[in-house]
Length: 251
Image (cartoon, rainbow, N blue to C red; front, side, top):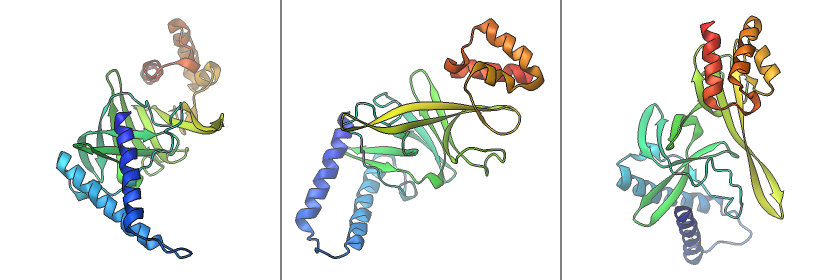
């Protein structure tokens, strides 16, 4: 939380400094001026990151990520406040030891850079991110940018999904949130949605009956397994769904 506050102060300070030193013309288009200022700020972020990790300019191609949820009790950032490390595959090159966050409302991955007491948040260009992994104490989340170019049978919206199981069957999760206004404040309701592909096309996991019927002529065996294990499909965790898919592939 302290790091986020630092980034807010940095942004406000830079904006105030800009407004004090660079006069804006009223009733004119100042878009070119703001583009120049944005490029100058990106250079500053680049220098911070190179000092910290030695990564070159190719990595800093995103734009500043501006947090819009600071007064929200429920924030759209995935597992906000939980410590994590991360790795990234960017333009085919792998980077490790990063501080990555994922905005579940915008579907955007961003990273934070630190040098002494300076901090900045930069949104990565999704077109150049093929994968990123978030490492928590008790779990690892592997995200891939999925489209029909990656999987020809993909029938959902393009974007980042957590790939939980990638065998003959596939199991992915979309970590999303919806925006609402509560008591005059922006709030974000986080709701992950799991999808499985058994034969062709991804289907949302909902009820037990619906899920079991996806397995066709093996539905009877899957139903018995679910009952024996007392798995509640609507509340099943990732290992349970994965175990069911592995069983199906072995039948």
